[in-house]
Length: 113
Image (cartoon, rainbow, N blue to C red; front, side, top):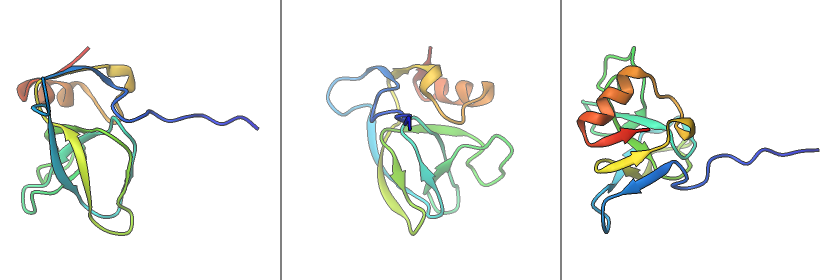
């Protein structure tokens, strides 16, 4: 039986700012089990993060960050580390990105290559 290893923590990063300038601690809203490299949007009403969806209307239709490591928030809200600015990332290792999301990320200083 073969197994496929998912994206490892930070594997999608090509470069980031010195120290921890690129990273932030955020809260992922419950009900999701996300992998490293998932593009995230920020829910306007709660300030919590969820998987980016270009068709949403709650704030998560704007890509705002990328999940640094996998997080299982299926049973409740969870703390998570994200890349929020000043970084270059590999498009092939992102989950849930599209052309609009890539443009949104560029607006916060995350360049998708």
